[in-house]
Image 1 (tube, rainbow, N blue to C red):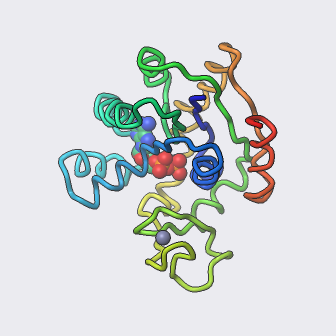
Image 2: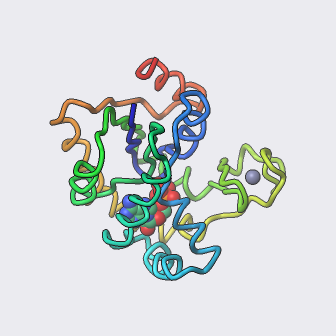
Image 3: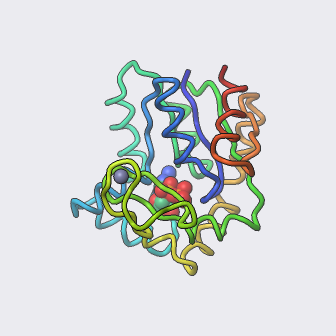
Length: 204
Ligand code: ADP
Ligand code: ZN
């Protein structure tokens, strides 16, 4: 089963994706993670992506589509979980031309809590694990021991722009996939365990 995870920044897509990858043996494809790897390695794609990401804007579709098609090729026959893609209607249409999506899980979270969740988020520089600062003991990653830092685009001024981009460009995908009959809404307001249990009810 090929799955797309939808949700606003801070909805908990990355957290759930890691759990789903393990439980359902899916190939996790996170466009945000791929861009961050490129930025760390200072590739051409990374340097271009950085100029958009730090402003809270979407990286241009042609670049994003290229990295996604490479990732899909690498997944081979394995079922995949797309996290952070598609983010606008054009990307969704292009995706439909490439592969068959079986289910879209939309993690639904009240707008009011998103800003706090994102601004308080810390991310492991090494393994990508994320947690809210209130749940961390110091700055070491509980998974791998490397450093947990605030992403440059998790600062408050950038977050405002990301949320606006989400409303304008990504939220319409809820209707896009709803019309295809493959959308499932999951309540994202609970703990990570509770949300994962909700997803379990959908996926079995
Ligand atoms: P979040 O889901 O918390 O917003 P991501 O890690 O998924 O964070 O994405 C971080 C940034 O990477 C986005 O704000 C955007 O600039 C860029 N990005 C990620 N995925 C896409 C995409 N599908 N299309 C365009 N830009 C993307
Ligand atoms: Zn780590």
